[in-house]
Length: 562
Image 1: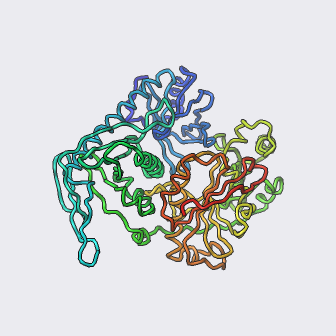
Image 2: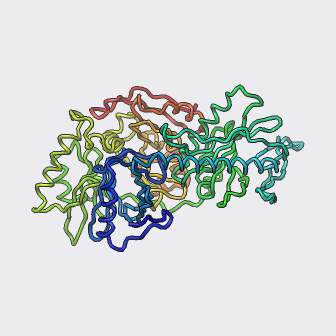
């Protein structure tokens, strides 16, 4: 089989033929690195992922740190060094480019990726330096009129070609002498992996400026990671003893990320926001353009997509019979055309109405779906026994995948039963889990994810709850973005009109943000990032006990950004 150009993957015409060719490639190597959308790769064995054909579709299933995943392969290619898959799941709502690299050739590929990213880093440094020499990104002290208000000044736009034009009322003073002091990559997620962000230091006659940008494949889903990484680096740079000091940060983003970046930037603490500027780079990476910083009131003016309705939990006899088997472990999530049943948060069955009759399909994600009938009765009973044995707090084999899978969903399922374990001031019901503030796929133009839990206090204040069971550097910014989306709908009265909490009155106050994790599972940078957020956004840290699977207990609660 001849190598395939990775930019021109072959669309599937015959799923069985593609499966045979891919299996031929896979059989030649035991150990692989698997990467999704250019993120940090996982070390997997060939028996930890599989290709199969179902209904003339090629299916790729694998076990990841986030649990088992199943994808439909739409196109594929073998370059001679790596197997590339264009895949989708959830009826096309989520797409990904998956790369499988034999461990033997991984070092050479990592080296080539690092070299390509360093080249983009050097190019970005030259573009920004040229822009600074023409005035972009060098904000002078604004002049004041007699009343003390800032006077309207002008800003120029530039590129390597030297084009310019008026953009918005702020003054940038040109400096002819701009030197690139440093242009390096950020540390990778692992020691043997190249970083995703440029770390650039530019020296001017009387100051040094930090600049950063993404040099890897990215989209709006990565904006929280960008801000977290950039602000931590900038915080360290502020304490550098080298003279002249660094006191400003330029964040260079592409057009597809700009909207999401502005939404995060406007929610920073005022003193920090004044030091951080957003620049947009064009698609050809030849020019940067200054962007107008948003005011907070602007994000409330943006048009919102239609508010999704809450699905009613109309359970039939079949659902009630299954729940009755383990009512303390099984919860039901209402969907558009039926219900999903979860065992301690792990989906294991789906019930759909077909021809005025409830039909059940069962199976853990990553395994084949089977219809619950007499032919598959033994498979169904085995699944229930496995869940009962391995997905419980007393499980002896803590490394079993049923125990480790979907930890955050497990914690969510516990809190859904009694949210007062977290805060006695919260009402028990209704409580909305995996709540979406808009229709569409898992991620939109702003990198929107579903909210873990949306609750209401007895005093009428909304509460946005974000759960983690492992260290996650983006914990703070995810919670803040959820706050922004809920607050936008609250201001328009959408939450009240949708009767999300029945007849209860919603207070005319912004939501609270509860960031929850086991005590030892908060990221070391959590406190530093928490202090970057504007203090009028009330964020609280909830430390829970490490043995939360047995019973959730709050160990500590404190305000993050007072």
